[in-house]
Each structure stands twice: as C-alpha cells, then as structure tokens.
Length: 455
Ligand code: C2O
Ligand code: CU
Image 1 (cartoon, rainbow, N blue to C red):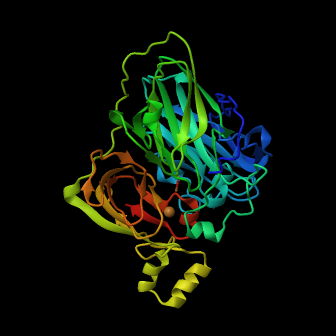
Image 2: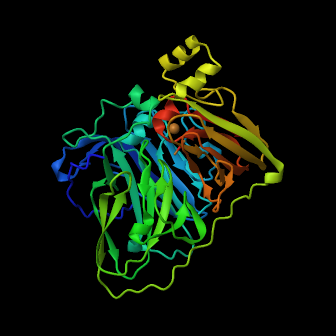
Image 3: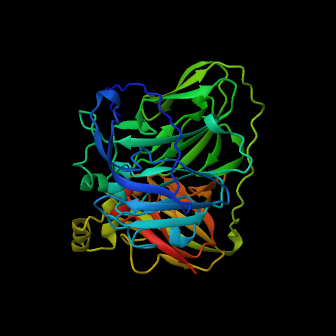
C-alpha cells in the first residue's frame, strides 16, 4: 500500500434508481467513462463503467424474483455480464464463449433469470475479465430476504476495489496484461476505494443495527480485514447467511470475488476506521456514527437459504492440483514436460495448470450426473495464494490440510494458500457448462480456468 498518498474524505453513498424499459427490463450500458479514484487531488482515470457509475448501479430484488437486465454494449470491444454467486439458469451465466457469444460493440443482450437465494452477490464483465473488470465493470447485486430486518440507510453496500494508480493518482492502464503480474500474484494495486470513492466517510447511526455488505471486486488483491476491531459480527459469507452471528477474532481474509456481510451496532457517536490489516493497519474508509436515540433490540438473522446438502458417502471425488507460476512453481510443471513444452506454454502466456492442463479445453475437467455430489480436493502446489470460484453452485468448505473445519460454511469462492490442501463438496444439481477458475483474473487468463458439465 502506498500510504504516502493521502486522500480526501467524501461522503457519497447515493441510492440509485435504475430506469426500466416499457417491457420491464433494467437498462445497463457499458461505456467509457471516468472517475477520480484518488479523490480531488488525483487526476481523472479513464474507466469502463456501467451506466456511467463506479461501481455499477446496485441491482436489488426480492428473493425468488426475476432479474431482468437489458445489457447494451457501447464499448469498442465485446463483453458479457456474469452474475457472480447466483445459482442461475446456465444460459444466463454470462460467460462469453461458453454460455453465450460475447455481446459485440453496439449490440445488446437480455438477461432474465430468477434469483433463488437471498444475499449479497455482484455482477461483472466476463470476457477478457482481466482487462475489463479492473477498469470498472462491476456492480452489486443484492437479493433481499422477504422480511428484511435492515432497510434503507442501515443496509449498506461496500464495494471494495484495489487500483494501480500512477504518481498523479490516475489508473495505470499501460500495465494491463503484464506477463509479470500474470505469472506472479496477479495485478495488484496501490490504492483502495470504497464504492469508487477514495477514503470515504460512511454514515452509521448510534444504537441501530447495520448490515455492511462487503464485496471485493479487486482483480487480485486479498483484503485482510478485522471485523472485531470494528465491533462487528460476521453474518453472511458469499451471499449465504450464517445460522447465527459469529464473532471472529483476528483477521478475516476477503479474497477477490468473495463477499462478507457484517452486522454492527455502534454504541457511541464518533468515528471508527475500516482498515486493511496487511502489515501496518491502514484505514481506507471511516465510519461516522451520528448521535440519536435509536436502540435496536438483539440481532436476529433471516433464515438461511436452502441449499442441497452434499452426500459425502456417495460422491465423485476429484483432485484439483494447481501448479505453475513464478517463484519455483514452474518446476513442478517441468517434471512431466519437456523443456520445449514448458517454453511453448510460457510463450503462449500460459503460466498455470489445473491437474496438469493449462486453460480451457474442448473437453470438461469432469462430467457430473445431475444431483451427484462432487468432492474436490484442491492442492496448491504454487508459490501464491489463489481464490477459486465455481460457477452456478455453492459448496461447503469441509477441510483445510486434512483438518475438518469448525464452520463448514457455504461459499462460491475459496482461498487456497501455497502448499495448502482444501476440500470442498457440492451437489451438481444445475444442468449446463460451468466454469471453475481462479478469480485472480490474470491467473484465470493464463491457465487457471477449466469447466465441468452437469447433464
Ligand atoms: Cu466472478 Cu467466472 O466469475
Ligand atoms: Cu490464482
């Protein structure tokens, strides 16, 4: 983090209303735009935005409702929209080249799907994601519970984004796609924004319960956060409400694409920071608690979503071995390949493999019968952490390094540290072609992307 760059505080959390077309579609347009990512003192960065907003406008529906979005591409390059974490109809998953052709410049595509689970989700570009998402093409998608306990100004989206800014505080676009980033930790930045704003003030009210919906839309940055230092409890992960509020001491990692919902009830007026805990604590937003005589009762959570429970006794068990990358990771690749083969991979910009295979192939990594339980045991044989995402399904996190976890949470993206083994399980109940990839977008583009089919 470049802590020497000091930003200015801005209170800007407008609630947006999206225009609807006569046939009831929300209109989302991707086009070039700009924003001051480094506050008033920084220059305007050239960005790609949905509806000229950073982040894209909030889309909010009730659980079980349809999301209908007419997407219009006004960019100069093809793109598509993926609805991250939604257990969605495969045809609406928005993966260019897999579930739909990319939407060409000047063309449009109608997304229309049911949002079956309440929770915090997000949408983002899914064509050349490494280039499109970190230029601004993402936004929050909130699915409300039927009797939502938090409303209006106590239900707050915090879209967290890491940017690589130059010395003028302007987005460094020249380094997009840098091979060094792809083969190392991914594109990491030096500045964080919340809802597109540098060092914002986030208003809270004394005595009220607030639901903070944190969404990490960064290309590669894992955020180390400390909910307990904010007096906050964890109430949901990757959209899925926990069965009860959880106090978590120490650091909780929020990897790219992951979400974490916190509940906080400030007891005093004043200011407290939202901090990045990697190295020295570093505040990148400030909560401003106003005085008042509000006094909410004890925190009660909405019911959990009903997800299909894996049947571990009758599961298809598969390995997912990650190899490659710089810092010694290529060595493992060389064991089963000639030097020429490895040189060719690197020339083609492929630095990583899953089970020895780099990138998308014509054949899926596996086929699943509809309703079959899949157990994946992932082993990270690389020198870097990864954030593994599975499309169309949520899985239970079962074990790390052979140790059953105390909380076998439902997730759609899991972290994996170097040399770590992580075991997950899910019911492959959603027919279609689904991606499994690292959500460090440069890693996904340079080998860490595969797919499976549910028939
Ligand atoms: Cu959040 Cu394949 O994506
Ligand atoms: Cu990765």
